[in-house]
Amino acid sequence: MRQRRRAAALIVVVALLLLGVGTMAMRGARADSNTAKPAESLADALQVIALLKTQYVDPVSTMDLMRNYLSAGTIGGMLSKSLEDPYTRFMDKAAFSEMMIDTRGSFYGIGLYIGLDKEERLIVVAPIDGTPAQRAGIKSGDHIAQIDGKTTRFMSTDQAASLMRGPKGTTVNLTIERGQEKLPFTIQRDEINVPAVTSKEIEEQPGLYHLQLSTFSEETAPQLEKALREIQAKGGTGIVLDLRYNPGGLLDSAINVASYFLDDGKEVLHIIDRQKGKETKKTAKVSFRTKLPVVVLVNKYSASASEILTGALKDSGRATVVGTKTFGKGLVQTIFPLASGGAISLTTQSYLTAGGTAINKVGIEPHVSVPVPEEELSEEGLPVALWTREEAELKSGDKTITVPAESQLEVISRDKDKERWQVKYKTGESVYTGWISEEKLQQFNPVDVQLNKAIEVLASQISGMQLKQAS
Image (cartoon, rainbow, N blue to C red; front, side):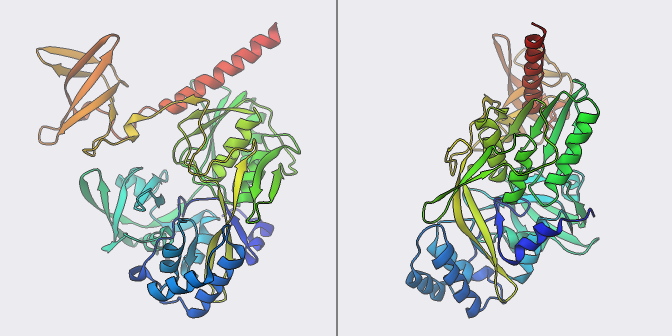
């Protein structure tokens, strides 16, 4: 592994500011007495209550906390009963250790970004490329109903991550709910190395680079600087900064990353404390800044630190934002270690974007909206849209319609027995309804319309700049 920065690691001794919503994704803290950890103690509970009273972003009643602890019998239960806050959570020693691994980028497991949806069900935000989970066929939007036979109802993401991790070569059994289907998966654990930053030149547009950030960890800023320097050395002319499926991470990492794109002294965000005081965070001192044109790519899973970076680049006019509205998490958590070796993650602050916009439960709207209907499910659990993998024939009444490769089709129904889909196909002013075979469809690897649009916007901006310079 790459050497970790000592200074960042030492912050944990006192308090670690988190902006992420995840164990490699969106975290929550909904645990009841059935999922309690035996390591919990009255001393932990009293320390947590004291921290809630003195550090939590909103006023809380000590009596209510004590009453709810006695009623629930667990710290997780107390938090669930007392707060409407999925980000404040108790971690025992093992869960705290797992959380710290998340900030460093390497572990043994199956390779999933996980979170809690609005119904507090455990959801797959995205499988990590090249990992056992991706190879097994786990998909974004899948719900994890069971892990090794244990229900995930009321389970925090920390607990779920702990259950899915384990020694290399061992297996974990998942029950996945995908629409109306329940699917069993047995997946062998392996080492998961999660690069925070990946960079690739876009084949169709030489000089343009697709720069993807998967998380905001200790490694993100140094990896980003290396990638940006390489892009510049190769004569790069523009960057698509892809923050889709990025659930956030460390606050300092978000500020440092923004500093590579913004001038010295530029505002990045405004932190609001429990007394409603405002502290403005500005760009950090960095040895390198890029002036290349940037298009930021986001979706509904881009959260927290991703939203801070997006907001800073959008509000300053530094970048055009493409994709779909972001997740909407405008809260900051601080990790307080406990005497037992565990920790409590408390929501201690809220924040506004660089331009002073509150985004909690709202999100950030892109400049250019590019919805992806195949990510959405109908009430029947079917995808709203599918793509053709290659040229295909659509049987529509007495007609046979030729559908080009990479065409989008609106889904009506699915016939599993005959391995076909009933779809609508629109071409020009005509709309055809009929059946098309599954083998001709690109169901799970659709054309990346959002990335294609981002590249188009970036290329157009660069062309416009060149024309302006020429004139």
